[in-house]
Image (tube, rainbow, N blue to C red; front, top):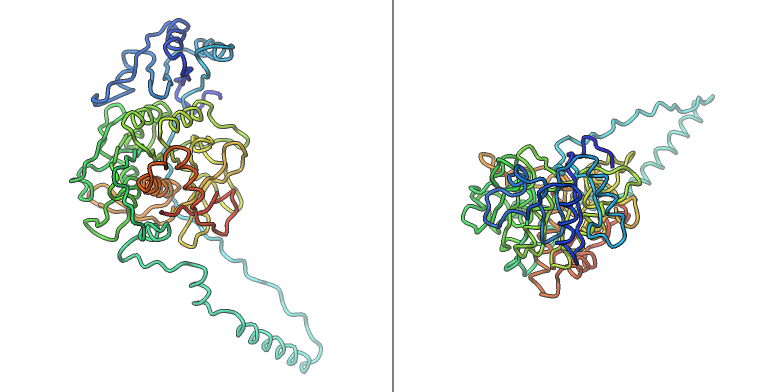
Amino acid sequence: MPLNNTTTGRYLVLLCPDKPDEGIRQLAELTQISVAKRAGKRSRYGRSATLRQHCAIVFDRIGVALVRCTPDKHALLAELASTKDSAILAVEPERTVRASMVRRRVSIPTPVPDTRTVPALADSSVLAAYLQGYRDGIEDLSKRLPSLDEWQASATPAFDESAMTWGVQATGANSTNYSGQGIRIAILDTGLDLKHPDFAHRGVVSRSFVEGQTAQDGNGHGTHCAGIAAGPLSPASGPRYGIAHDAELYIGKVLSDEGSGGDGGVLEGINWSIENGCQVVSMSLGTPVQPGQSYSEIFEEVGRRALAAGTLIVAAAGNDSQRPADIAPVSHPANCPSIMAVAAIDRALHIAPFSSGGLQPDGGEIDLAAPGVDVLSAWPAPELYNTISGTSMATPFVAGIAALYAEAHTSHRSQALFDILTQQARPIDLPARDAGAGIVQAP
């Protein structure tokens, strides 16, 4: 991948899990740089603070190093990765990732007037008979068709949002016996408004991986996503908007208050989540990929290693489509086969016009769909609540419901959790390219 505005100039290095120390030694010897293990659990800041003093840092639970080196050293690393029996398995440029939220309005095309005219008829009596027949036909058709109100009622499910949002209802979370109790959900995003009335008295574990910024959310995106995944059963104001209201929240700030970050911060957030025993990781972030472009070998291996450790990663499919004319492929890192990719639907259960599609086999498929249009959730003060759209909003619905299944049975972990979510999804009238197995459903 060439260096461009989607890469940072740093590199990711995948270490062989059977000989990580040898991989670190090879990395240090080949690049002549200093290598450090990632910062401890209690450090206020992680990767960025360490990289000021060292040229590489290793995320030991997932076996990946973030490296700052010159392009010539990168070429040497890539050559070593292609060598048989090397302890370094892959090398990739670090990408820039951003929050997957849609702020723009969806435009509706203006109907084009029908300028066709009725052919001229020579005789007025013939014209009168023609018009009479036309009127009779229209009247007969109108009697056989449902009324406008009936059509709208059948086309769009009726959701009374006075007590709970349409997303909570559409996913069946309002009728489940589970709450996510005892399950840990990591939200890797822009942080959380830690003083929000819906979370201020709740045990939240937080950590910032962004240099110079605490886990306090200065953007809003992270608070909104955390609210969907695990907001309270009875908010301070307004209807219920959250799914797993008793789950334990782990907030990892991997995106800045401006809504952007790098692969390295995301990987350290995953490393931290696994270290803390989180069964579910929700990532409403990504970067676009080109048609035909394959998934990241390193993120796919991290997805596998996370599953092996008992952690399911759920990620936003991306908001790069302009349907119906243009459907964009699933973005990075959701396009990895071992990471669950989530598309967005609206309250009529139609695919959102911005939602990316599963255009590529062997990675790049959509796994599930969830509510992602006009979704109400928490927001930093002073607003406290906001309604926005995006595959970002769909992703934490799936993460929250994953926590419900994880609570329901201890066998629902890792790949088994992935499988049960897709098996129990409610099929909807959309191709798998758009909605995968269907809309996610609570147990």
